[in-house]
Length: 154
Image (cartoon, rainbow, N blue to C red; front, side, top):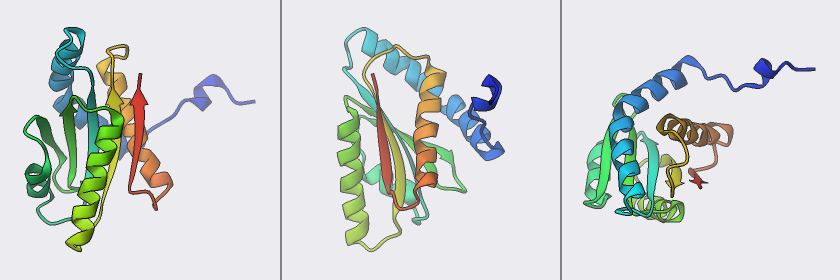
């Protein structure tokens, strides 16, 4: 019989380092978005973690995001970015990713991968949201055929 501690999910070194970088990048914006949710200035927001081998991926994302979306580079050498989308439920984030995928496919550029979580309340600690997005992103590694995965946090 497995002990309780054996059932806990452990992360490899690269994942821990990604979580640390995300924590540094996202804590302040998440704090602000949580305040906006509590004061009804926002109904929801989505967090999208994206990765691609595309040349100038950051420029591509900047060109295709909305003015209200906030883009941060998580890791330059791996072209990993986090996009925070105001007033966007998880399905809105999913459709945004589909639109990006279509642009990429039509231009015959390298594909991308993305994990999306939609946040509609402040029930979870900010750090827990980071684990949700990283766990969702890690599902892409479990199924390499998937281009993007999503999860709603309610």
